[in-house]
Image (spheres, rainbow, N blue to C red):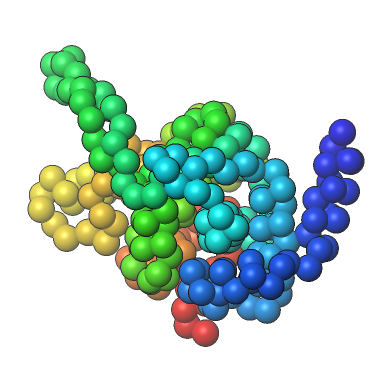
Length: 256
């Protein structure tokens, strides 16, 4: 089974990407132009696999076109460059709304109370099954590759987080030592962010990262890829752990 899947993926990666797909990526995903020629070829191969294996569904009247599919897949593929991947194995479908959508949420409050009600969202990731995205916000997030505000990076980071068996701010790491080092660095940085916010000190990472460890990892992923020089300067160990996991050094891209 695994041999057949591997051979199928190899065939897909070897196929030439349709010209209109390439044009959509180059137009809608400016981050593509930061990649080396070899990384661009690798990205095209990942896009082929993702579009073959992951179904897209339009919601709220959105018609899913090839432009929608390749724009999302290309950004999801950036997170996979340079390392072995099983292509978001827990992801079953990608749901796309035309714009922000409303979801019912329940938030715990101090004292055990729960606040429930509708909330406008631009994206979310379910532990097993789906990534949900707003198409308007997919385009907006991709338009500036250096603002650390990318909904596709954020929600697909949650999918990477879930590969370890839980959404707790720690993706699947290869060794016990790597997991221990990651836990130590991320716990310290997470607590540092909370402390800075409590004392009204300026922070690089936006406050939403302090919601919980899973959101900390997802937000940190946006900064790692889109504001890497600042992240490396102000949170060097955090940057180093993410560079080791992703097997990428986005700071070099921006310096180049």
